[in-house]
Length: 343
Image 1 (cartoon, rainbow, N blue to C red):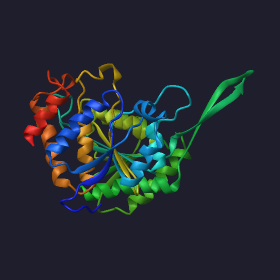
Image 2 (spheres, rainbow, N blue to C red):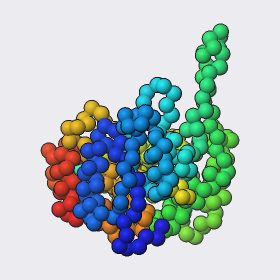
Image 3 (tube, rainbow, N blue to C red):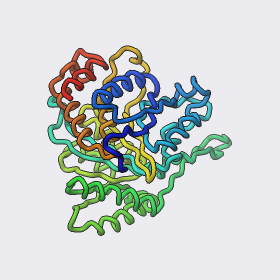
Image 4 (spheres, rainbow, N blue to C red):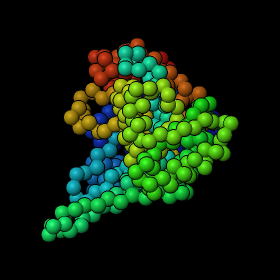
């Protein structure tokens, strides 16, 4: 995306639920301190969307993202019951955000591992997360059996794999690991593996690659995390492995995420809305700040993205006014102030 140096970039801002408004305030303060690169169109979703317009994903929010093609999204709560579909799933389908990208890197100096630096590419539109579920009669009970079906297509398998390899080439990464369960799911996972292999061959001499069965991969990520560079996999496996990866470096409080499509991109903190601590200024805004860094990088402001990343890392490592989950006694705004001081 080409943006004139002096112009502000139109973007949708969704504060979200629970701790969302607090961490959004911290993030926008830091971005304002950096020169206000974005001009925000503030919209609601989740419980805030229900409060504002009676639905968890208002049409105004969809229209805003369709206009800006760029959004920063706080944590959202999907209401329990009432037939509500996951809002994140709706956004991914609505804007064909085929790639969920989750970078994971060691930041804390007192964590379990010193050398984690991996990026997981998760196919975002298919697999079991299409949520095609229903009941089947069993032993006289009309709801005695449930089913859930998923599907993968050759087209999406190739698209997510190519995205992972292109990222590896562009960012000097050495290896892509294709993760699957083709030993059991012969067709569903087998086709993904076959298509990924074909794409991998196009990058011979540029990027090395291997393939791993998902359960073995989970074990190996814990035992030898430095053996992983870029991972590409299907929807369900990617969801699980990306949270596992976050656990290696201290949890979801340091885990940003990006949802990338051909025309639009939505950046997010992948943790939940944490209603139990909402309004108490205990929330750690670092994941949301790092998501904003991914967003800056996406629009070509790579220098600003790197400045922000360094400021966040420096603050966390120094434990300068950080929140309790990071080993400090600070609060949501105090850590933001510490980051601004470093900027």
